[in-house]
Image (cartoon, rainbow, N blue to C red):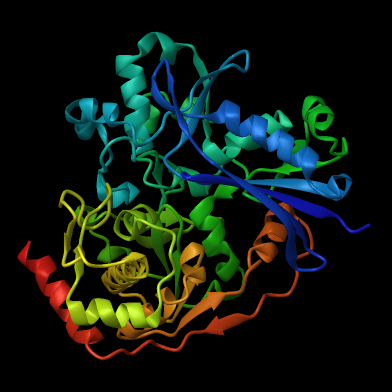
Amino acid sequence: MTPLIAVFDVGKTNAKLAVVDPALGQEIWSTRRANNVVQGPGGRELDVVAIEAWLLDSLRAAPERERIAVIVPIAHGAAAVLVDHAGEVLAAPDYEDPCFDAVSTEYEPLRDHYSLTFSPGLPQGLNLGRQLFYLQMRRPTLFQRAAHLLLYPQYWSWRLSGTMAAEVTSLGTHTDLWRPHEHTYSTLARKQGWARMMPPQHPANARLGRIRPGVAAATGLGADCEVACGIHDSNASYLRFLLDREREAFTVVSSGTWTIVMANRGDLRRLREDRDMLANVNAFGAPVATARYMGGREYESIAQSGDEPTVDAVIEVLSMGAIALPSFASAGPFSGRTGRLEGVDALHGTQRAALATLYSSLMTAVLIESLGAAGEIFVDGPLARNPLFARLLAACVPVGTVRTYAEGGGTRVAAHLAGLPSPAAGALQSVAPLRLPGLLEYQANWRHRLEER
């Protein structure tokens, strides 16, 4: 029997478990759950206990689980878990907890310069260093018990395998802890003692060992099932394109709770801290010019329903002059502005979805242009499944062919991360621009309104 891969993907909003068959080049089963936050001793926390219970139950329910040879953890950024010497979890902070803003005045002077970390100063706990500093200063008794600092994908690989590791894609995600050009921890991380709490580094596709006996007993997986080190979620999206195009200029639009634009071979000198631009670090350790905003949250705030947009609905929104102006969530290039909706009172569900899609296309085009991105533009994640987003984006960007990945396009990167033979690259679908009457004028007015605010 050919081996299967279990991909465990913990986003900020949802967690998903998928079983992937690399021989077939497709996902054969999946399940997901909505994530919650809970109150812990250090503040609001990620509900790692409930997520783990769901994961074990889901693995037991997975079809042909006895064929699962490797589990690959993938998780969102700006998250880490503190663990004591005995392996007890002390804190799993939620980066959206406003309590972290209370230490900003003390914390800011300690950060390495932006030109060294390419990590912009962000609100709440979006800089992982601010979370750690808050716990160190405001919850010293709890923090002093901590022996290990595990980045979120590697927390899950430890829970499954019993082996602790660190990995660069999560270290380089606006943490303030990493200097990507020097491939070393920041001065802040070393002076505060956090670097000493980090386990040894491993590549994202390294196998850390077999699953714990308790995991095997709880799930029915074979005792020889192994666990990969794991990777930051947006970097997993980016990696599927990087595997074939490392030397090419291209742009990835990775979507989910966040819409993250990553420009391969992009110029880091274009990055602006005040626009929430940063350098992510790819699976091979190289910095990647990045811009982002909280696109999934903003889309939901505008659409307010699960309706799908239609071309007719977009035309109606354009003719009515309904407009959405940022920002409807924290962070992003227009952070600090209050989102505004105008002319939306008469819009029904499909039209609200059209407005949200139009807004997402305009915002994403701004990010792409801010990076000076060249080459093809690949849309991945939920926005690739939106029937109109990619077509509107193609009409709104001045250069670059927009393409989407077929469903199950993550199979190849899953195989790479699992250390198994990779299937052939899936077919990419070129997108025809949706050139509607009045669209370019609407875009020009939208940008003019941004400059006025």
